[in-house]
Image 1: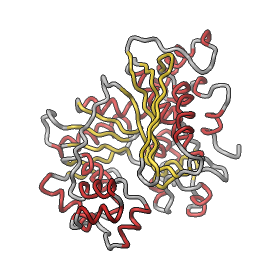
Image 2: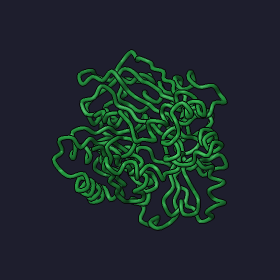
Image 3: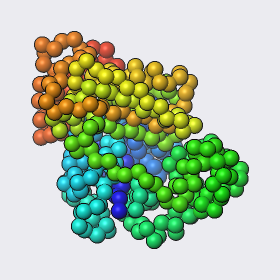
Image 4: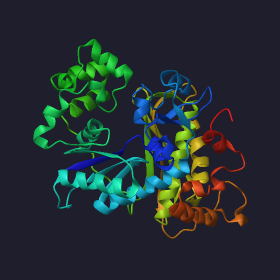
Length: 394
């Protein structure tokens, strides 16, 4: 069995945890200005219709009492690393897929899935004071859909014998890869639920949505998903990705903010594992589900967020046409080495000792929280990251 563990409203929950006055209030993390975007919304805000990827202006119209908080990617990276450490203590095969979610393989764990999920949720609550929704199923697909059904702060276990009964009533657009255009095409043919898809001949699905999407839907509608849990401890790469709630323009500030957050998360994990990497890879999935990647091998190994971010930006620009609509962005560091000594590539001031400085920052943040000190090397001389992370209009 496979577990999908997903922290609820992660960024917003972290802000509510460290600022008790925000508990019980509608909170959104993101830019506060006229072009700002909501990155994460608390469940109090979601009750008013506020959601991730929504323009801040619209969010304020839906919820006039909404409290906007500037994103603090340093803090989120530290909290994420702490939660992932808890997950690794429970299972040997853990695959983080973003800051706030991971898959765990229960093979060899020696505890019943339901008891495992309950214990995992309890431990994260006790040690990190965060709500964790957990889905358990025979495949990654079923586990992921089960964790969605478990939200907020719940648990759903789907044994193999119950997969069909669990999947059939779900709306077709709950399946991965079914965006607005695909859902519209399916609706025209009266295919509204996963059960409808399962009852539709494979060739018919291919004619409706195309060969690749049709093949994928035919398998997913039956709960079939051969993807294994790929552990990322002692791994050959460190990475994460984010799927946007709605397709995002390639020029949108949310793209750069997301890449910066992924760079910070990857860097924190590299340093925690005493690793560095030479190859930076950017992954992009477009609105039509076409997926492309591009990599760059650096002259020196890196473990700093600034260097990873600096390498990722031109890779993204080279992959994506200006007006493209983006469904998913991923960032990975490969070619890991436990022996190589990383050097600062982008700042051009190696005598300052940026690597030593960031490691000192790691230790201070681990003890006092990310708000205690900020890594200046993340910002660099251009100040671009600073503009992304501060509230607009200040």
